[in-house]
Image (cartoon, rainbow, N blue to C red; front, side, top):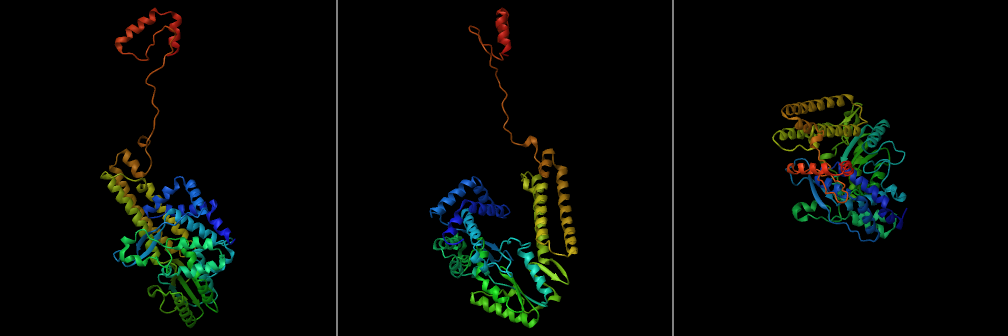
Length: 468
């Protein structure tokens, strides 16, 4: 697929629908209430909105609106200078960006620029692949060690996405697809215009508003990063060394200390040609022996053991502690009269905890240190025990409705209903010349009505009774 077919595929209804489903799934788990609200808003009548988007793309009237800059603190939250410059586009813009990504990854001529046996980040699993992402990268590290690598050097490219030249990387893609109309849409998709520049002040320059830098938060950015480093991957894997890369993190595995050092010096030169450099804080100053142990991509590899790093373990326990702590605080606030959201009920909180545990466990399913997992389970058990203790204390003081709210199960009496009204009057069929008799009469009228029935012909009395 090339030429005009690319643009046609981007705006095709099925392509936009697939892109929307990915955006919807990702947004469901976002920590940002704004993102979840925007996703929920688009979900209402999504089919109609996708058709409108497809029509505007076909008529060339769709324009990418300004995005919102979101500085995400790194490390000490009080340090305003240290943050991750996330760019959040509108839902429609993200759908188009994701559709472009899906089309580009299917271009056969472009695949050599982003898919290679030494790069594992930001690339969807290919047909026939059993592993992708971090597990696939760690398996390759172990394979290199099995092939004789005895020294390693781990490194991180400093501010990687903020150092990518938009012009350089789009020129590489343009040389492959050779379609000006498609490239114009792609260039618009990676251009960054911010809607909240004024409030950013001095931090605005940290966002990729110029040619240098692509947006973190744009689904196209990982692909662009892999494209611009395709030559780096090829050259770094020539000879007797392996270089395994995951986006901006890479590891050199070498047969000797000298070879590892030489390959790292080569990495610095190649990156300098792209206007990039290594992060001193996250890069090994000297090669390390495999036997001494090392960490890569949040994995600790040491003495035959493969386990989540200590930092990853602590982050996991801290996250669960915050979830359970927020639930406990919501219980106490409920006693003071604050409404309890169902998401903060016992069942709602435990569902989130279970989801976190399952997701984290799947991510590290390839690790072999059972002792570490047993210790983490024990820590989780303590957190849950403390949380349940608070739940039972609050339950003791709650009434029956309060206990249902704390548990998170609906009360039938408390559910909103729209009951039918029972008829207040009965309709009585009248024969000609017979006065109507109301279904219910005030007491003073009853004797008169009875008397009227007593003097009426039997046939009329029967007919009246048959209608009651």
